[in-house]
Length: 382
Image (cartoon, rainbow, N blue to C red; front, top):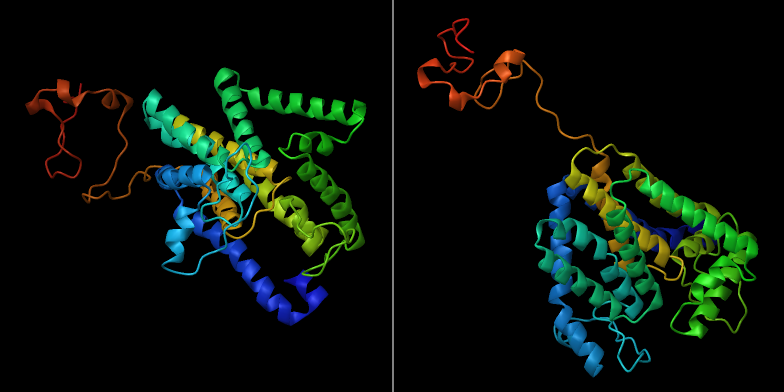
């Protein structure tokens, strides 16, 4: 809102900026308020996975026949978004469903692969676990977009690394060190910049070419409007270049200035670093944390080739906030001397008494509950 006020005035800032604030703050804090425990987190993943699998018949019909049955049915009840007219790839239509663009379908569905496999699948049989994960991955693949597919591949690679080297505590430090060395070597020895090499694996060379131009001209636009960005006005680019900015992490810096871009990326990084630094003893919580971080890694990767807007932007921030419960301290038992639900007061037991198995003690020799009026005789507990 500060950036829009500086560029356009208070009126635009209150309208456009106010909506942007609501779309940013509401999903994050909604997740922080509602997802407070591991059970809440698993219930969320179960609900999202079920939604994806329920939509599978609509997606298959759309990719084979070219008709978006979901939007056709929904448009008979209320006003819906327009059907995205995109050229087919490999003879198949790129699945849109209810998203604004097929690439957003892949981003949203693809971000759930690690969560489905490591959170929901943790309590499923081997066959059901892989069948469910494969179903979610297939739904992401039906978008036929290189960005979301790259996010799915990254998740599979990270889960494989975690599984293969699970006995090595410093496996993630080793992985990040290897990746850093590879990136440094590419940057020093390769003839092309690193981002050009990564974008060259897109389905369409034209799409990769324009994303390279977005990076080149976008960073120059940020330098030209470093503090408050360009707002809702045109950003600095050639007249023949499309106005879309297909890079989420660069978009905020172009529109709202470098501080806005740094704040968004900083909030994302701060959440992940807090979760990484949390001390966890429960293996279940540790698996949930790994799944959450791998899912966020897919958003980190796809954010350099895709812009998140509308429902995808809301889902991204909701999922970002849904894993912060991991940083909360685990619940501890009530301190000694605190009355419990029966009105009895908890007292410390000796080490010898704690080793007693009540089932092995005869009924007439079992100690009475603390709080009974008849005192327990010394020496009766053996």
